[in-house]
Image 1 (cartoon, rainbow, N blue to C red):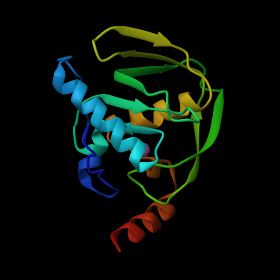
Image 2: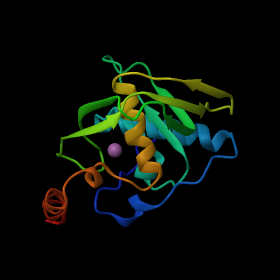
Image 3: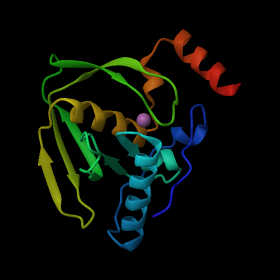
Image 4: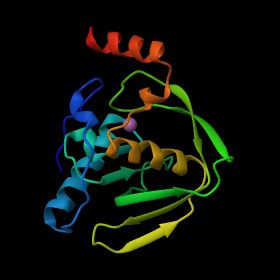
Length: 163
Ligand code: NI
């Protein structure tokens, strides 16, 4: 395992759209284990490959208290089942260090993904996982949590980051 360098806002590489994983091979396994180590050492609960400058649709998440329950999502996709059902959470991001902001997202979604071997799964997640997976899928689309904030707030964060 190796710790990877995390890109931080406003690095333009965070805006690239990631492409689907088509090969479920050893290099995917290595990427996932490196991403897990990077997430754990950074103290995060989720990491998208885009954040380590690998523009593939790969996400790792661990929302367990003892950090012993790594979840891996390859090519994740979601559909909103009820856009009136919303959840607000204070979100942070390893690519926007030192910032925590409340963001509102739909909390009733249908999620599909593949595991590291290419097997397909589906679930209607709940609570923190719903928020976390949407935050990470945003990264794969080149979208960041700062995009949900007011332009004024976003500019303030950008200025602070450029210092
Ligand atoms: Ni993030």
